[in-house]
Length: 483
Image (tube, rainbow, N blue to C red; front, side, top):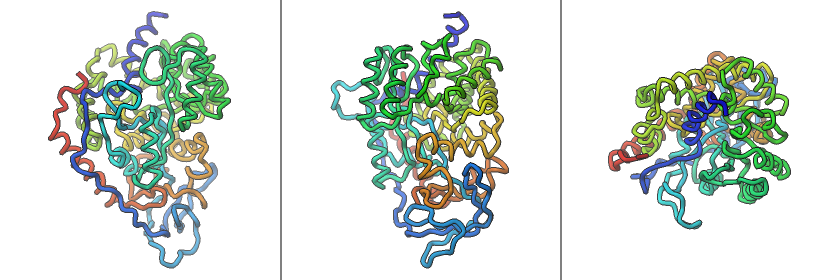
């Protein structure tokens, strides 16, 4: 391995480990009081009158001063007559868009801070699913892809599907890694194929490949997933160094980070960005740049001041708050060289997005939420702003979090656009996001599967969550976490 890339590998592993490993030095996590659950007593028919609709269809124009009828969780009319007895919402001056998708998140789930002693051992840490989902729905996020799904993640998805928790649709990707790390390990092609079959049998939606797989096993995993009708997404294994083109094989459907490309570049050149974009385009591979995660990592490597001052931090579970602020791996391992390197990566990722756009590679918005500093829900708004800063138009950025995720997930017949018959996962905004992408933050209310939460209801849920998090912090000692 070339010395310059060896130095990068040592730096990159600092980042890579956090995406899969969530190490907490406590034995339990408790909620002091039950969270406030959103009410379920919505009327069967809701009408939004005089609203501007951004349908986000491929050629859909803005529908001004429109009446939108929602019945039993579905859009039944655009521009029709108001049914008798319907709840009526005044949408004058407001903008209705599809619910947003974050295509790369990690979610807290019940578990243990150590590997289980036996397969059926009960968890020792417990987290309330509604608390995990509330920041997402409060920020208009109605679709998630969990890229580190485990058995408990299936339970979370079931809680939402049953109506016991109000939360986004969740797609689940189970990780396969190589070497001797944590999770599902495959170090031979035969093991890789069997692991794919196991993942499908256990009810996961996608296969996520990780950094330590060898070439033969990676190839077998992608081939087997193809035969099983499953998409593969994730990292580009380090074994492809010097032969990157071989990683782009049929069935490798999405690269989950811009840094999967940048770790293959010795000098972060425009020529490399163009070459990476061509490889993705030729293979039909999509990309989720996750610009926001590297921006936060670069910030934390320099100082923890910005993260500690972030008002969104209070909505994260106190375990994470403590881990991020007292045992932050990026700040702990900081050096002038590392700071400069991450700053160069952030800048290169912007140029890479421009190259991907120029080549016509589809990109979807993802944030790697739960990595230090990346607060789920809020982080998607920042990602869209960063994508626009990297050269996307406001409409392209919105498409990356609405229509395009639905297409990649294969659910575009059900959601992702505002059309008759589609599921009513919708966000009502106070200002036009096509005029300024930051208007995505000006949320007047959210529909989650047809259930309406106005700004007051969303604020109440978030205030309740922050209050209970603060109470938990006051009653537990997190000072030794991660040490």
